[in-house]
Structures are given as structure tokens and as C-alpha cells.
Length: 224
Image 1 (spheres, rainbow, N blue to C red):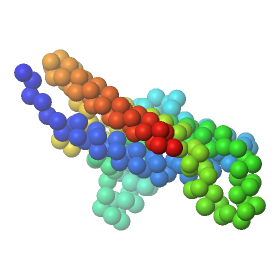
Image 2 (cartoon, rainbow, N blue to C red; image 1 turned 90 degrees about the horizontal axis):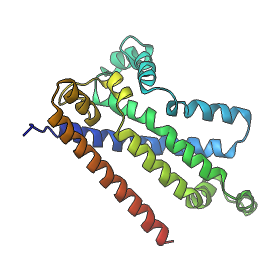
Image 3 (cartoon, one colour; image 1 turned 120 degrees about the horizontal axis):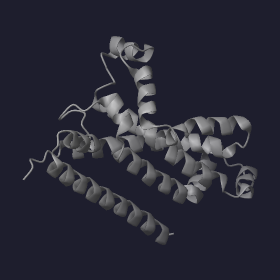
């Protein structure tokens, strides 16, 4: 029986949860702003923000290394001012997971925001409601299904990321090795038994998590 180290699983879950929470905080406001705009500039920024969907993960990882590496301006600033490094750390894994997952939330949420009847927004403004009040009382309640779908997709993408995470965080055992990387390392080492077990665990956890998220979304729908 192969010796199973569950650290990669717990790290993958931690990275995915953190990246998803950051995607919610960053992605929903961006999707809201993009959803209100239909011009060429908005479409351009939407294309840039959703570029990680089509770019190879290794290319994204390379860009992140150039941007956040110790030789970059950002990397040197963080190291000199806060004694902090991004690459080859769990923080780097989280940032990589965020970059590859946030486009799914932005795309889904923007479509949901754009689909809201403009007359409802106009009526709320006529009644003197502030934009912040309109956002929380109209936009979010009417677009929550699209947002929930985007959150689910973002979490699933963050949980299963391999290429960008490997480029930015590496595969340091018990430090930055996530579950997909652990599977890859097991295959490289010729340990097919361990690889099969890790694949089974990863698949089972992914199904359970997605099932729970779908059930929560369904219960929320039924309660309305």
C-alpha cells in the first residue's frame, strides 16, 4: 500500500478556497462595472480579464514569474519593504489559482448583470436610490444565480490548476505541492499506485464539493 500524504489535498483546498474568496471580492465589482458598459473599452478590458481562459497555463505562469519574481520591480519591492517573496510559496500558488479562476466568475457574473431589465434600474434611480443601494437591492438579488455559477466554476478551476501553480509555486513537498502536482510527481517517479490513489481522492473530493455547492444553490432557489 502506497504511503499517502494528505498535505497536498489540504493545501489544494486551502488555495482553492482562498483564491475563490479573492475572486469574489475582486471579480464581482469588475463584472458589475463591465456589465453596465457596452462600449469598445469595456469589451477590451473584458477580453484582457478573460484572457487566462484561452492562454496556456504555462504562459500565465511565465507572466506571473516575470511580474512577481524576485528580480521584478514588484518582487523586489515586496522583499525590501516587507521581507516577503511570492514565488515558490503557498501565496504564489494562491495567486496563480486566482489568476486562472477569476475569469470564469467575471464572465458569468457580467452576463448575469447585463441581463437585468434596465427599467428596474431606472425606476430605482427615479425613486432616489443610491448606486450602492441599487447594487445590493437589485443587481445582486437578480444576478445571484449567474454569480453562484461563476463561483462554482472558479472554485473548480482553482482546485484543479496545475500549470500556472507549478510555474509560480513549484513542487516543494509539504510546502507548495498541491494535489495536481503531487499526482504529476508520482507519475514521474513511476509510482502508479500512488498516482491512482491520489487521482481517486482528488476526483472524489471534487465531486463532493461541487455536489454540495449545487445543493446549496438549489436550496437557495427553492427558498425564494
